[in-house]
Length: 285
Ligand SMILES: CCCCCCCCC/C=C/C(=O)SCCNC(=O)CCNC(=O)[C@H](O)C(C)(C)COP(=O)(O)OP(=O)(O)OC[C@H]1O[C@@H](n2cnc3c(N)ncnc32)[C@H](O)[C@@H]1OP(=O)(O)O
Image (cartoon, rainbow, N blue to C red; front, side, top):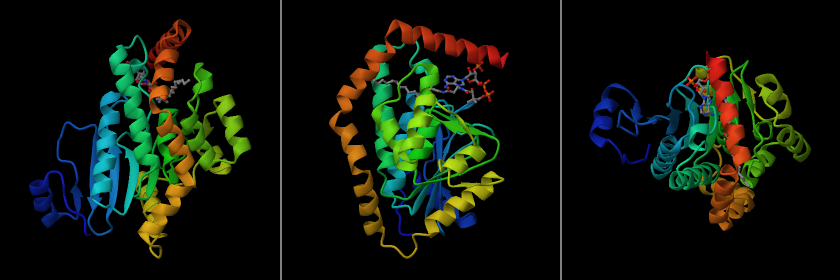
């Protein structure tokens, strides 16, 4: 592989002697972990924020950094997955939105925008190995990738309307990029969570796999399908197809943060989030 290491160079080169999988990021306290296969050039980006990979400010910043590192290293594919055995990601960490610190709330939404822009617009081919439940923000991350492989008996979807929340435009365009418009409209208005089988049927995921290992292999097979394409032509094609969605957010990025802050601070929204958090905690008892 041609890529140059940018993080943890010494650790990585010593690892290379005994193992062809090297970590791109060396810090042990990170909420994401990146491993690059030097034979294939494929990077596995693993979210690791127990118990549910709730997307808080720190995880979002970490994800953004990792996506940028993978991109700078000119990896040949990025597979997004989870360290949990049952949850891909529970979506946005509701604690970031409930009784929030106002400055942090802005940073939080900006970090989510940045992750989406980096992942949805990535020059590197992207795939998600969805090895657990994937509601809301978790579904957004998976749907931002170019290919999805899911394990059976989990659920995935943009459930915002069920929480009394309106998904922003760029969540919706991500769904519309994957699903036929009519199905996207129904799914979004119903806030529907799909089982793995249902998700396969409507095309929200591309394949099912029995195990995480099989899911990772299927993602790699997807990357291998580009073997005969020119990487730059491939990227420019993807870029043009996704251009309008990305431009729409870039043009309204600051306004979008303001809309979010205004929305979250509404007393009725705060009340709804509080009740939802309580219901999640009661369920855990
Ligand atoms: C105009 C523009 C306007 C803009 C308008 C604004 C748009 C906002 C868009 C919002 C996007 C989102 O992603 S909103 C987030 C939506 N996410 C969800 O609805 C998922 C909710 N969670 C679940 O369904 C489940 O937890 C699930 C993920 C399946 C895992 O189930 P399990 O039984 O394995 O685990 P649980 O016992 O439920 O959860 C373990 C612990 O994690 C906590 N937990 C679970 N999900 C959590 C979450 N998302 N945030 C915080 N905490 C969470 C639980 O309370 C438990 O806490 P303890 O009891 O303390 O251990």
